[in-house]
Length: 218
Image (cartoon, rainbow, N blue to C red; front, side, top):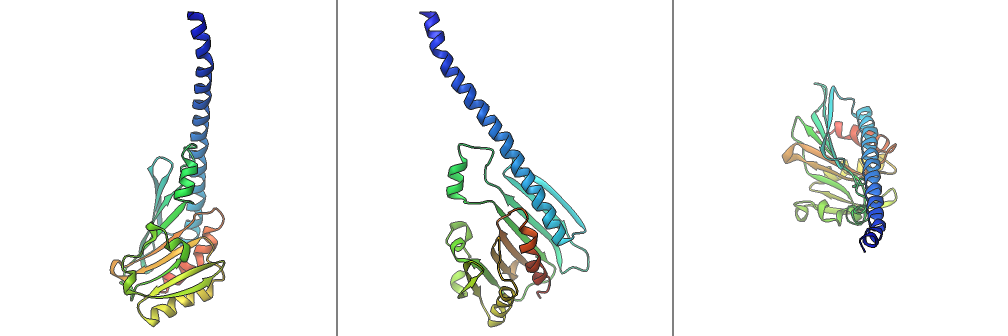
């Protein structure tokens, strides 16, 4: 009887060992993928921003990273912070759920200006604007216009016509925003925010014209 019980437990042990091995391999591969993607995007950001000083670190496991860029004295920006949130590729069982909820990796940049900006304004992709995490705090106090930009519909939120003209100037300058989903001018915080999907090989190309436009703001 004892021999029979031990034999019957062997398949269970084998299955558990196999599952453990698969999860371990998945954790290693997912961690490596997220780190390699972060480092590649970090180099793209550095190439566009051309900072005086730069640093980066890991916030939590392989899912979140941060970067800090310090600009030259002559720049209208004091610094730029960026936060990366990647899909949990190291957790294979949870990854399908994360794809349904979060949909994609995210990169949020905060550009800190030395002087206060003139007025609030937003350019936000219409589908992205429907997500709970993309809500604009005082959207009911802003004017709204809908425009086609590249392959997607975008909402323009603004207070004054001058701000609308500024935002429209940027849109007219760029045929397709690519990975960029939200551009926000927040004068009260002396900040601009850029939300994008960090896809390797696209960030530098899509960010560069927006970044140059922001450097000209007052």
